[in-house]
Every structure is written in C-alpha cells, then in structure tokens.
Image 1: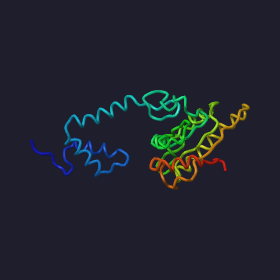
Image 2: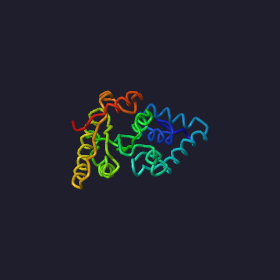
Image 3: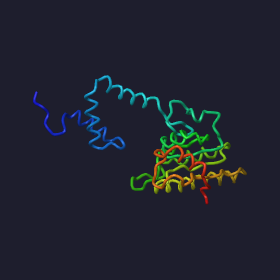
Length: 216
C-alpha cells in the first residue's frame, strides 16, 4: 500500500488534531503534540481518556439550583444544610465557584452564569439565562445577592445586566410587600483585568470580605 501523502500525516491523525484544536486554549502546535502522544501511548491509556470523557458526558448535568456541573441534583453544595441560604454569589464559571469555595471565606450558595456578555464574540444576554437567576434570587430565603463577575470590561458589562435583573426581582418583592434583596459586588481587591480562577485564596477572601453595595 502506498504511503499517505501530505505533510500532515494520516487523515485519522489530522482529524484528531482538528478536534483537539477546538478545545479552549489549545493551538495547532499543542493539538499536534497531544494527538501524537495519544497515538503513541498504549491503547489502554488512550482509551481511558475517551472513557473518562464519555462518563463525564453521561453523568454530569447542571444543578437545577446553582447550574454548576454535578452528578446529583441538587449538587452537594446546594444540598449542604450548613450553608448560609440567605447569601447568593453569582459567578461566571464553575471554575470561579471552585476558586471561591477553596478559600473557606464564603459559606453561602452560588449561581453560575456559564457565560458573560461579549459583543465581539457574539455573546448577548440570551446566553446568561437571566430568568433563571431572577427565579433563584426571588426565593424567600435569599437576603443578599453578591455579584462576582470578573473585574474587566466584559465582567463589568455582565454586572450591569445582572443589576437590571435583580432590580426586577426587588420591584416584584416590593409590589408584594416583601423586603428587597441587598445587592453587593466583590471589592476591587481583585486586579482589574484579572480572572477569579487565577487569583490566590487570600486575594479572593479579601475581595469577598470587602464587598460593597453594587448600587453605590
């Protein structure tokens, strides 16, 4: 059989490279290295990765309360009776949730947006599912909602959309004679332009402790 021509190697290898390139943060060179690694290691080792992906896709679903990935519903955090159910922290991604929770400085519950506004990437408010947030924040046990979006341009734009949604929640609460939720935002102890998931535990803890009113 004549060897396959073309500088990219076998078609199946190129298909693997193309799929790996679609992963966040993986460029052509990294994808090529990973693809060659996967076809070089013992088959059982490579298939363990495929099995792990298959199992995660089959078992993990968003928690119906906080929308974090979980194998149970509600997730372990939402089901934890020791958590402060009056306090709700909104974060952009599950990675942000894990970074905050690892500090031990926060004992409330979460709501994971799963996205943030980015007009340049075509991500608008429909990606945020603000209706789900409003329903969560409208629950009687919620007294404070803290906005924990990242301190950059997209995070600030997302925070404005969240403020509007929470104002609708408070308007409905007032209409029914209830007390409005207190709306706060993480302090600017987090560096502008930085990402929560990459900050130290102490920086996140300081930001949470120094949170301020989001309406000031």
